[in-house]
Structures are given as structure tokens and as C-alpha cells.
Image (cartoon, rainbow, N blue to C red; front, side, top):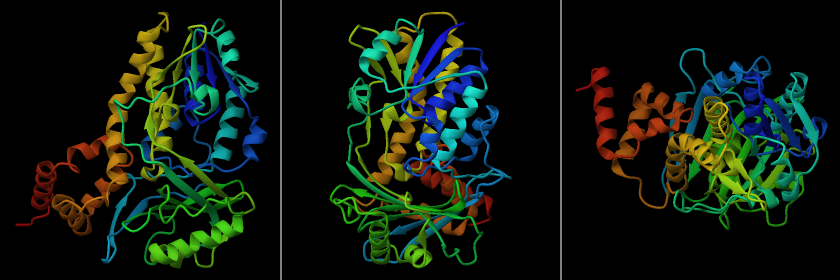
Amino acid sequence: MRKILIVGAGHSGLHLAHGLLNHGYDVTVITGQSSLEIRTGRPSITQMTFPTALDYERELNLDFWSGQAPRIEDFKIHLYPPGAEAVTLKGRTGTGDRYTVSIDRRIKMADWLEYFEDSGGKVVIHGVTLTDLDYFSRMFDLIVVAVGHGELGALFDQDTSRFSGARPRAVAQANIYDVLPDPGERENIGWAASTADAGNMIFVPFLTTDGPCHSLFLGDKRGGPMDAWPDRPRPEEQWRRMQDLLRKYAPDYYERVRDASLVDGTSTLVEYFTPQVRNPVGVLPSGGLVLGIADVVITMDPFVGQGWNHSTRCARSYLQSIVEHGDRPFDEEFLSGAFERFWQYGLPVQRFAELNSTLWEQELPPHFQELLGAAMTYPEVGDRWIQGWDYPPDFDEWLYAPESARAYLRDVAARNGAA
């Protein structure tokens, strides 16, 4: 039986661990936090589980919360151009009865870690150094690193040949109660916005340990108007500043949260990071090799909402590569090849992230404005736009190039009987 070590108990690492366990591998997860420490710790950036990722979780019996979590069936995007009225488009997050959910990471990772151990996986609660990894490399057939910071993260060099448009980002987030509903819409609609004058927002129904609430995310470039947190304010002061920013730059959002309050004293966070792509193969001091997974090697702007979508698909891709590899050595060719296989999906996601990061750096191209107009006229265009978050490579087919965008719009108009 092949022995595999996964360092870190995050979304991608635990998804892969459960998949490997189901295929009969001897799997150990080593993490610096117990499930109780994860469950009672600080929040992380809110993520969404889109319909396909939710299907993949269900294949591994990892969907524990759909009966309790708000079902996000519709999403609305607001664009705030410079000196003009907001543009709004709406679409469904999935076809048929498929939907999106957003779960507090603390619940999700703690439950997955406990379930992994209950299912026969080995869990070691301990910090890990490079010296430790060197030692472990003699004990395991493969080591997958799911920790992207500190000396372990430093194993993976930046790869500017894949992505060189790094833009340092500032993120603030709050989990809140007493949000006013979107008038005329379903109770659990998600909102997202991009402003020309400031940054971006995501505003979604959310499940915490204490039940449903809403999570509000504000993101901006470093030094931008929404980078208002240099002093790391206390939760209530951070929430007051977030409301002030919404009042100024996204009044529709402010109206929904003007009377809202924080869920508890651990409901806010501030983070700074830089989107980048790193080499997937790390070399240990002894010459041993380790494989980085998901956001260890691909860090993107969280406004594109791809964190858990990305990590799920990366874990699934790595699982397929490992299983298909059989008993052959996990050498550098295999490690690089496993990442290249996933990069076929990851590259289009990077293009989508780049579009969102640079949206207001120049005037919106005419074909993009035509697509926005069509999305407000034909529900199927709005649906395709929103459902592209579930599978961003679809945007390559119709969103970026004027020729493909207009060909798509002609097809939509013909299906709807327009001249």
C-alpha cells in the first residue's frame, strides 16, 4: 500500500486526503491545528462552493451542510462605472435544482478533519519544518504540501512565465446579522460588485456555527480607497469603516446593511496578499521532492470567487493523476505532469481573474458593453455569465474576444426571435 503524506488541513489537502483514502492509499495528514482549534479559531476569507464542486464533495460523502446552509440559487452583479449609473445583471448559479452554498471554513475543515480520522485516516497534530519534511521524505512515497506560508511556502518559487500581473491586494470581511432582503428577489440571493472608483465586493448568505447569516467581503488594491485597515482596527471599528465605504462607493449595498451587526467578536478579518503562480515542485535540502497543491502554487484575487472551486478541482485532478500513475515512482516528471494536467483548467481561471483585476483600467470594450446589455435583456445570457463562475474556462468561448462575443449574441437573438 502506497503511503502519502499531506501537510496541512485546508480545503484542497483534505479533499485530496479523503479521495486517496477512498482509493485504498495509506494517508496521513499532519496539521498544526486540531479540529477544535480550527473550529474555534479566527475566520478565513469567505468562499463559495459552486454546483460542480458540490457534486464532487458529494462523491466523497463530504457535503454535510446542504440541509442547513442557505441555498444561493441566484446571483446579482453590480458594476459601478465612473460617473454613471450602476449596471446590474442577474443569473442563476446552476441549472435545474443545482445551487451554490457558502460555509464557514472553520466548520467545514473541522468536520472534514474529524471525518477523515473516523474513516481510518491518520492525523498528526504538529507543526512541520523543512527538517521534518526531509525526514518524512524517507518514510512516504509522496508528500503533498497544502501550506503556502512560512518556510514551507518558500519551497515554491514564483513562476512569472505563467503569471506576471501580480497586484498586491487588501481584503476586509465581516460576518453579519440583520441584513435587509433584496426587494423582489429570493431570500438567499448572492451579490457581487465591481466599482471603478474603489474596489470590489462579494455579499452572500453564509452558514456559521451559530446558523445562517451574511458574509460581506471588500477587496481593493494596496493603497486604494478600500485599503482602510493599516491599524488593524477592532471588529466594531472595522465594521463601521466598512459601512462608511459602502455608503460612499456602493449605496445599494449600504442600504441592505445599514442596521446590520456583527455575529460575534471573531466575525471580522483583514488580510493582505499578492496573486501569483509558483512552481509546483519543491526541492528539500536533501534533494527530496514535494508537490504543492491549489493556492500553495496558484494564489488569485478572492473577488473572482474561485478559492474553493479551484482547490476542489486541483485536488480532484491530482487524485486522478496519482491513481492512474499506479506503482511507478513519484518522480519530478510525475509531479510536474500532475500540475500541468491541472493547469489546463487553471490557466483559463487566471485569465478570468486578470479580467476582473483590470476591468476599470481602460474603457469597457464595445463587445463587453453589448454583452452586458444582452444579459439584461435575455435571461440565458445572465445565466451563462453567472454559471461561468462554476466553470471559468467557458468564458474563453464567448466573453473575451469581440468576434466570439458577437457570434454568441447573434445566436441568442435568433433563438429568441429577434431580427
